[in-house]
Amino acid sequence: MDITAAQLAQLLDGTLEGNPDATVRQPARIEEAREGDFAFLDNPKYEPYAYSTKASILLVNKNFRPTQPVAATLIRVDDVRSSLAFLLEKFNDIVSPNGAPAQIDPQACVHPDVQVGVQTAVGAFTVVEAGSSIGENCTIYPQVFIGRNVRIGNNCKLFPGVRIHHSCVIGDNCVLHANAVIGADGFGFAPQEDKSWKKVPHVGNVILENNVEVGANACIDRAALGSTTLHTGVKIDNLVHIAHNVEVGKNSVMAAQVGVAGSTKIGENVQLGGQTGVAGHLTIADGTRVQAQSGIASSIKKPDQALFGAPAIDYNDYVRAYVVFKNLPDLQKKVRTLERILKDLEGKA
Image (cartoon, rainbow, N blue to C red; front, side, top):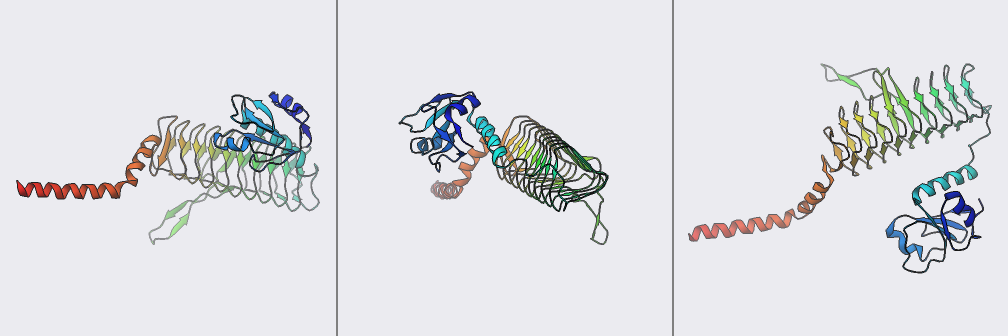
C-alpha cells in the first residue's frame, strides 16, 4: 500500500503538517517504525517516541502540542484510534483480501441442500451439514465445522478451526476467530443420590446478532432451553467463556479469560477487564466497567459504575482500601506497640 501524506490527510479528513509527498507503505508501532511506515500517537506516555521515531508519517490528535521538533510529517485528526482503525481495515483488505476466491473448494464437504450466497468462499476440509445456510460475501476458511440447521448472515468471516454446533444463528458482519466454539453444551449436571452427576441435555442454541466479533479459542455455550444471546456489536476477546443462557447487551466488550456463569444478564456498553469472573444468575447494569481480575458475586443494579476487587466494590474505594491493605503489617506493629504502652500506663495507674 503506497500512499502519500496528502492522500492520507484527505482520506482521514485531517490537517497535514510537513511534507505532503511523504509516502508510506505499511503501519508500524511508533517506537519501532522505519522510513516508509506510518505510526500513531494517542497515549501521552508514548510522546517521547514522537521526537525519535523514524516513521515518515505520524497520526496525532488535533490538540497535540509538541515540545521538541518532530521529523515525521504530522496528520492531525479528531480521534487517532478511530482513524487508525479505519486505515488498518483498508490495509488489511489490501494485504489479506477476502481470504479466497468466491467458490466452494472441491475438498470442502457441503451438503447438497445447503444454501450458499453469492461471492461466498468455502475453504478446503470445511464441513457444512444439512439444513444450514450461509449468506453473501462470506469467507469460510479451511477446516471450519458448521452443524445442522445453522444460519449465517452476510459479510461474515469464520477463521480456521471454528466450530458452530447445530441450530445456532450468526448475524451479519460477524467475525469468528480461529478455534472459537459456538454452541457446545453448557455445564449442566444434576446431582444424584449416589453422589454421581447426571447430564442435563441442552436443547437451546446460541444467537450472535449483527457486528459481533468472537476471539480465538472463545467458547459460547448453547442454552439449556431458549438461547444464549450476544446482541449487536458485542466484542469478545480470546479465551473468553460465556455459559449457557447468558445474555450480553449491545456493544459490551470482554477482554481475555473473562468467564460468565450461566443465566447471567449483562447490560449494554459493559466493559469487563481480563480474567474477570461473573457468577451465575446475576444482572449487570448498563455501562458497568470492571477492572481486570475482579470477581462479580452479586448483581450490579446501579448503571455506569467502575468496580474493582474480588468481590468487586467501587473502584475508588478499592484503591483506597488497597493502600491500607499494603500497610497492614506496619499497622499491626503499631497497634501492638500502642497496646503495650496502654498496658504499662494501666499498671502504673
